[in-house]
Image 1 (spheres, one colour):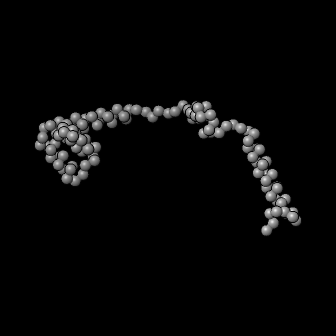
Image 2: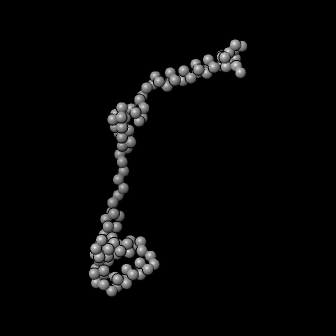
Length: 119
């Protein structure tokens, strides 16, 4: 990094309030004594003020109401349903019935005289 780049970085940090202690005092002394540092400081300070003015005029952009639904549908189409699952209305009831059947079989085996689940 050459001297000019280093000067810009140090003055930029000074303008942004990132320097403290000895570094801040050294930059203030350089700005007061060196015309190149003073000119660079003035330019960066003015650019910071202009940037703040420009940013303050911006308004927050809001996503349209259907944005989340559109994104979800796009992901579902492109992934083939791997991320949000398929809309199988058949699978869940079958799984519930299978679990109930297993519980019933386990209960019958446990409660029978000759059940194999008896200790």
